[in-house]
Length: 147
Image (cartoon, rainbow, N blue to C red; front, side, top):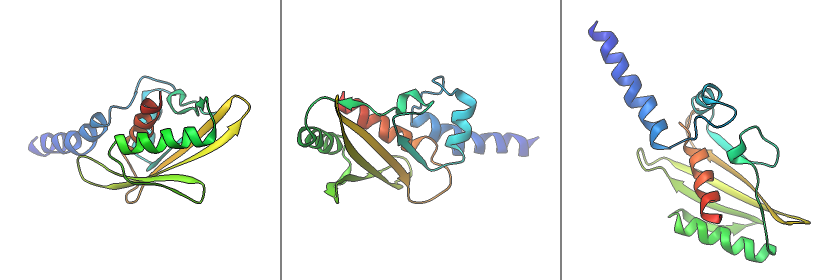
């Protein structure tokens, strides 16, 4: 009985708490079970035009590329992300996770479309096979700052 209790406590501390700290929108499409499976089996997230993850669909931002680039870099700095810079046409930054101090990489590509500038983004953990929704949180924080 003690082992079951200990296992439950370890599960809560190691899995559930980190996921909840990242405040993922669990009830949003594609649903909580698919989201949880993803958070526990992948260490990356993407903002792309066509995805069932509605919160991670690429926004189109009004303005020119230069203006949008400046807004993205400003948002990265306001979020406290490290080394926010442009490299070979990509906007890049390093995010240090609050709890275990892991380093994650975020890359943003801007694509000119008739309506303005489409934002495409990728966030990836440097270590591990699960991110507990950290990379999704990085992208959601960036999108929120750009609104």
